[in-house]
Length: 324
Image 1: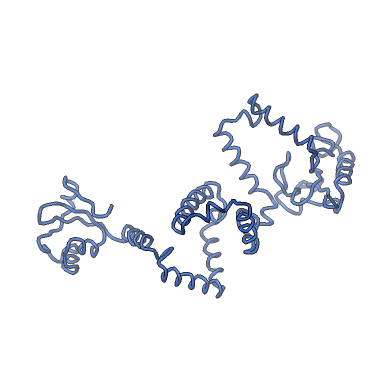
Image 2: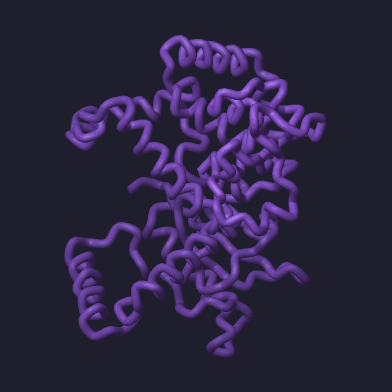
């Protein structure tokens, strides 16, 4: 596998003596899945030897553990629970078969993870996800934290081409643009709820951090121009935010947030509750200015419609809501 391995040590915060010796490659030294706590401070993780073969790394790991000794055996200062040199990073087919058989037995006998209920497995997964987020390596390399962050458009294009070639994208390609939009919306809501629960991605940022990131994006003139052109295209085609459905949903949302609720009585004696004076007036064929003056208390009557006082609102039994 080449000279890609190294040995490393974790140092104590006080006297900076080693408390753990390990061997690995890639980001192993910063991985939180150790039997001991990974140091919070990056400077307390040191590399002893680098550019080693796997065998050389195993041998050096065993040598350092033997020299410094283990606390559990009373021979030294390390918290390692073994003499090192185990756990090959590229197991043989026989070793893989044994591991798979061991997992099957755990599920059959109800021990280990096989003894967990579905709820316990979900909780275990959440704990593992949080532990991964707490790992020092992700803190040092935030661009690798989740999904497409830190990936280039070329990498996305390569993945898409691979999916199409393998047949995984046939279902997606067979969908209409409206069906894709609906599916993306549902997936986005589900993923957003999960991110909020775990504090991942943008959900893990404070309001100030999100504002800072947004302002930084709009400092780039190319970014602003890109979104301006996309908006023009959407309005020209009546898609996305410019679609009739999206515009109506936005209008109703704004009415709900900004308009004050009112109650009026029709000439027939029915009481209506509504928001948005102009839409209500147009719906019932009333002059907008006169109806607005009625709600404001400047007029007592508008074509037979009258304002309902607060004392009557709670006692009304024939209440019809204009906006659902």
